[in-house]
Image (tube, rainbow, N blue to C red; front, side, top):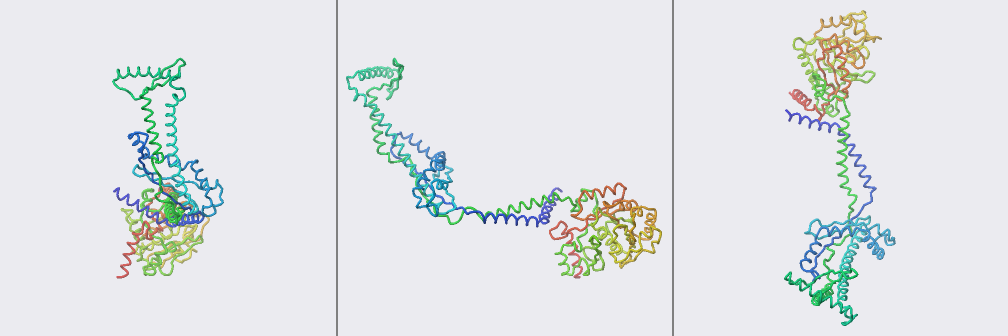
Length: 607
């Protein structure tokens, strides 16, 4: 059971999209127009990139092997590449590039040959892509510009300056290390050259060395080992710390530092890592922005999403009744009939197709009348239309009316609506025709004493009618008019009175209703709308049943609620409702219902 409910909901969504298709398409067109307009005014941006690879070198180092391996690992660390990206994007590096571009500005493409240094600095906006894993060591430098040649030129310039910068930085590090080592060697040899061997300072130094050796011997005996370098902090009389080295230790340090200095002097031109260009930047043939094709696709998607949203929003704001399920579930009203759209309200495509296929819903000569407010009354006029699918809808209504009251058939029926223009007069006329087709004697009384239209549907006058009977000027037999439909008669409204409500609620009206009920097998009263006046509510108390007409997608729920409350206040017997002017167009909610009967009668025509 739940599965069926979900299917109905999905169908409702599809029907809503078809119903609001013009709104959705209009939204897509508007969004596409805006996208095309923005694309036309947006200046194209070109992009060029160059790829740099970081390669590790293995020179002889002043560090031990284990430390060198750790240093290489640090170069492979992603943090190293993030640091390099921050460096290239820093203001310091930006100034370096702008200075180099300013020096070589004569080689710049286009109108940038005479650009100032500040203008060139504004062009240096690199976007850096660093490797995400340690297996890749490629840094990509991307430059975007309005000039494709300029973007390629700046990307290559940044790559060259970065390579030079890394080489100089590593060379400066080696040079600073050499300077430190040389200072240490000078500290070991400068004392004896300045003071001589017999100078009191040297004597004091030898005395301190002797004390250090004694301490060293004591440490060897206690620890069983001889350290190469021992740092001792002794407070002299002034509180200063002095470091003493044994002659053997000093000699070892001297030899180690001298060896490392010689190695560094040999390897100082060999850097720990090197950077080289693996793919230079080339001039881009197409702009990266705006991507017109992508923007158009996004515009179509956004237009459809926005249009669908607007469609659902309008549907949310639309409080009109559209389906029979709303009448059943929302108002507990039995739906006795679904009447398709007819005449000028009929979907044009189906109407034209029916004419070409000779499966006519209406006769070739339009049988419709309009009052001064342009409300149209359609009627089934000929045998041809009595076999049309529209007639089958009224036959269904006739059958359902017969089974509403099981104990006895309905003989007096009030046909009304909530507001004007919902098709109550059309329903009264056509229901009378379909009932007369079965051989029953049917009388249609035009009880709308404000805007009567029954006489127009049958092309008769209303000089005499209901009002003349109520005023005692004539009898029922004198004013009843036979129609062109066998067994069907009408009672026009007659002259319009100044007090319609008093007339329809008079005792003469009640006697007339009882007398007409005795003369005819079915009496149909066409009354004014319930919301406008009280005439229909007054008549509803004297008939056996009330049939309320609801125009699909036209009547707000609140108005129907008010109409039902008026009928409930007078304790009227509401037999049910008729959903009128239902859209049977292809793709609509009730299309397959209509198509079934249309196909059935088309097959009958062929036979």
